[in-house]
Length: 394
Image (cartoon, rainbow, N blue to C red; front, side, top):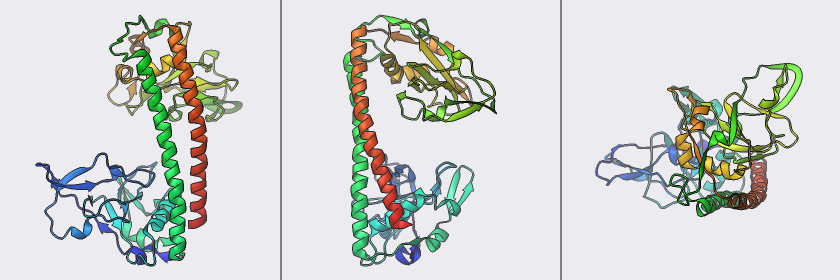
């Protein structure tokens, strides 16, 4: 094992400078340009006016490893790393980050070193080196660099390890891109068949949402140990899902008494985030198909159930997820944001012919089947990557 300090020396400190008022400043990378996959996102790079002399050595070079010195949260520790493989003498990095630069490239491969640091971060290795301040977590960077140890391999073995992990990483990125493309394809198909619901360009008749079904708020359960256990859909289970097909993977709760039947989910129910401190989450919705699994939902959710056959659940779900409808469902409240039945009652839903709705639902099902296969491949690749990093950097 070799100490990181002997490989890179101390972290090079970043620069922030002043506001770029004339648009002639230097591009500066920030932690907002970090991704959790260890690569940089260049879509929102700021420019800054930096007049400090002798910053030439701070321009990023291909092979530099940028480490997060300040940031993170209770759920995401500080200390993320990203690998820079872009042009030299183009970007600087800000004062919330530092750069680790290999001193002797004949002994140490920078991409191998990046993966060692990345693997350590994923297993929580930076947590013990962070100080928490108001709103930010700070990394004890010097101490971390002094104490972190890197497994020693020959330079040829290091390069081979990096090649293997790079190949898997590229496949993971490809699978994620494929999933995103399928989502875009579904949105494009929706627009092709139904147009923008804000303008209803095809002139479909509209119906108020609560004339076609009804809502019920979730219950605030008192958990107990009486042995009544069931699955429960909560706000944390929404994420980016559109449809939950089977609910046996949801968290279990233990209750003293069984919920009333009206608080149990049925196939085709649509569930909204009703209340949350994060306004962006309020109104997020998904369709639930619990099948034979007894499942309820939390008090921070509201359930919608169709009472007729005018509207297909999948069509309705996707129109409720459009930006136009989400804006109408914007939560109310100064701190905790809330979605209520009065807001939902004001939603008018265009009702195209059922044949078109079913055509769209069939398309969504086909896309969902393709996504399931891609997601399965993605899960295997991510498991393989973690397993190999554990092997190489244990």
